[in-house]
Structures are given as structure tokens and as C-alpha cells.
Length: 67
Figure 1 (cartoon, one colour):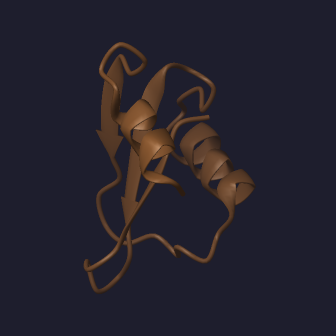
Figure 2: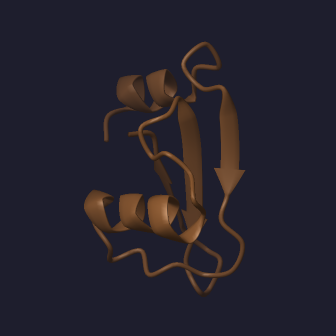
């Protein structure tokens, strides 16, 4: 991901809420797999203007998604 798109993703005007998934998530999942977790596991709309943050088991990596 380039730095410009990273800054755009974090721009507060595009994000209404930030959700941090508690526990660990298999970060090998692609965007579709994480969207399923958001939709079925959290009962949230992955296509809302929210930012979803997941971390791995060792808690040393993050994956953020804004669909």
C-alpha cells in the first residue's frame, strides 16, 4: 500500500467509526475473508464508512480495512 492511500484511508472525513477486533485474527485472510468476519461475526456492514482493525496472534502486526 502506498503512503498516499494509507493517509487517505485514515482521513477522518472518510471514516465515521473505528472498530478494533479483540483477540487475534488470521491475517492471511484476504479482504473478502475479513469482510465476512465483519458481517457475520460482528453483525456490521463492511461497506459502511467505518475502519476495521485486526491484529495477529502475536499482536505485532495490524491489518486495517475500509471497504
